[in-house]
Image (cartoon, rainbow, N blue to C red):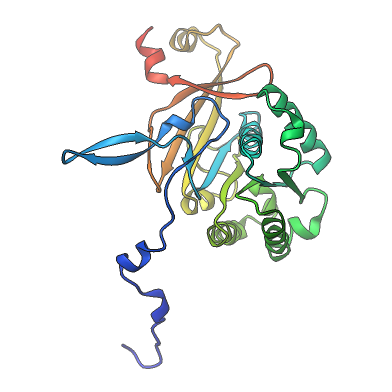
Amino acid sequence: MEKGRKPLLSAVETLEEAGKRAPKLFGIPSGVQGLDELFFTTKIENGKPRKIPLGGIPSLAVVNVTGVSDTGKSLFAEQFAVKQASLGYPVCFVTVESPSAFVATGLRERAKAMGIDWEDIEHNIILIDAASYASIREDTENLLATLEYAIYEYKTKSVVIDSITGFFEAREMLARTIVRKLFNFMKQHYQTAIFVSQKRSGHEELTAEAAGGYAISHIVDCSIVLSKELITSKYTANLYKKPIGSVIRLFRIDGCRLCGHDTRTHIFEITETGLVKIGPPLEEIVKTG
């Protein structure tokens, strides 16, 4: 070892030692129809591995939900928050794009569409209004302090940030630093988190790349990509079995380091009442053509 270098002994441990602190893996219901069965764990039976549905997104995962505008990202995040609140688990919802009063309107509509009474959830969703307060939106340390207060004061189990892109929209060189701080914060406070991130129109539709480059997808535990395509030719109309002028929406889990997941591209829809619903794999639609 070179002179002057000092090893940080507290950073070195065996897998056995780390394993004693490893949290239990289980599913967190998302509130998005068709999503929860797409994650699974593995069980050894008779010497062979067998897939076991997880029943939700992985517990304590930091999940990146990305896509261009009008692909259902915020609806996805709101459904997750409403579902968790309805189960009695407080959720911290950081709103970066719209003031909290307008987000409350959206959450109320999502609850009605999901058949959940507003009175059963309104005390379990804690809003942090970063849209209205630049001191939170533009200063990461203030944001973390405010988040920490909300987590301890209301004993939240999950955090939703819509959207994380708003924290570095004018300073994308800092994207990786900001996302890493937020990721580590969620781990330290044992929060399951949904980070909504915006894609630019120039990005490939079904990649996890977002504004700020790959900073988010490289750091988070799991990325979910939402995209849409306007059907403008007879070929795509025949392929998707939709009339010309329709919009086809596609969903894909881009990766998940905590557990197994369905790797196929799926059709999804946004219902008339504003709910995201995951449908069958695209390959099944094409095969039946």
